Image (cartoon, rainbow, N blue to C red; front, side):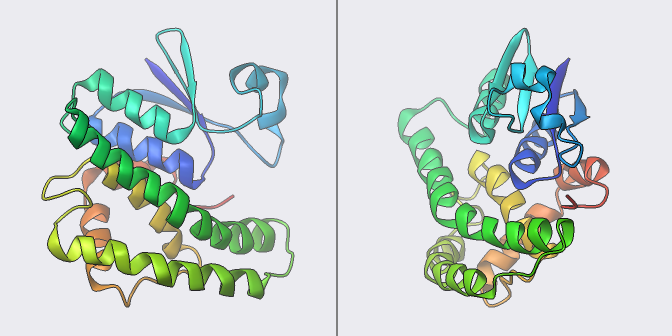
Length: 211
């Protein structure tokens, strides 16, 4: 059986959502960051930098969330990530766009409001939030435009791009991040949240993104 090591973070949620969507059976092992389990000798053997998520399967250890998700779809021979080079490239393109232009600024909300403020009881850097809000207001219209023409990020069928992007925007349910002005992103978000994969994710992350 697959074993997934993680904590209640965006990148781990991406893998769990993908596992649930694909229907894989897996064991989830929580790595308690407060207890510094990610820096334990045992975990460092899996992940030399002490990061999560880490997937163990068939004697192999795989890290980096998008790489794990691609691996999962490949071993499933699943339509979510097709073998055709052009279709796969389009999905990769969207995954890379979200990783570089959406994930990073959204991660600032996650860090400032959930880690820095709630976990360490430190003051939120409002200038940092204002900066990333400006960035997202430049990036979100692009995604909103795509979703005005398509049901999902890469067309009318759900793909790995949707499965890895949705958990990033789940940050909005736990921070001040707001997407209400983007009609089509909001529609897509509600659509992804209504899928059984989200219910499966929340059975593991029972308190959501609580560090």
